[in-house]
Image 1: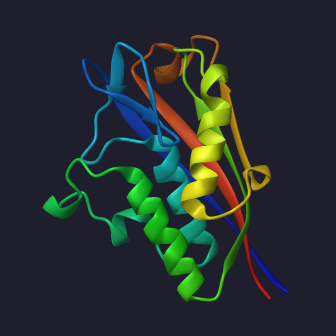
Image 2: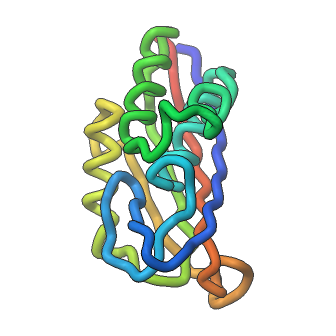
Length: 159
């Protein structure tokens, strides 16, 4: 078996009055991500991890934020397309792990739903999807509630 790993990282600024979508789940909050798409920073980092594992570039290459085709798009559609692209190249997704850095809101109540949503979109078992959240103890842009960052790793394989 051929195993490959990839890493992804994404950041979005937060602004009042915008919807907050993380891991394909809408979350009640007074701020949301500023973005060309729906701003799902979890899915964007995950797409980069998966594409990187297969050496297929990054999310901006496949879904440029200069294209009206992706204006306001549901990022779950992007993740589904990435999973399809990997399958076309003969890869299976082994597992993924995402870490969200954000001061507020508390994300623990939403983690299980994020895991199920991401698993369904990628066509893998929920036991193959890890999502964790942490604060930065009020340090940095995440701690000041100016933005959110996510890192993701992915293992893909070809039998």
